[in-house]
Length: 90
Image 1 (cartoon, one colour):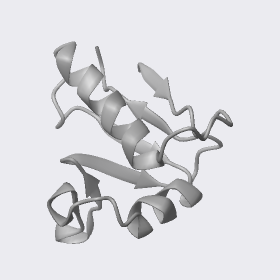
Image 2 (tube, helix red, strand yellow):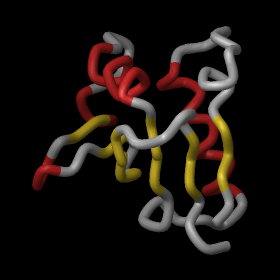
Image 3 (cartoon, rainbow, N blue to C red):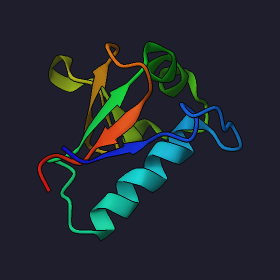
Image 4 (cartoon, rainbow, N blue to C red):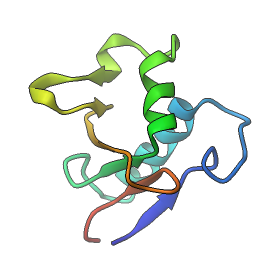
């Protein structure tokens, strides 16, 4: 399982969590990973930040069917010590 750790989770807060996750998703997609194969495994703190970020467009975040998604990528909240983008089996 390939993961990309969040700079926010590593203690670097130069950009918003949303901007960091967006760049990771776009980079993975550019390498051929589909958004359906990706999962954002986020700390509860980062989930909270995404939900409350006024800079996120309504079209970028959804809660349909009991599943939270950011840019079409499923979010698994909590249960991790640091937020990371799981690229799926690559």
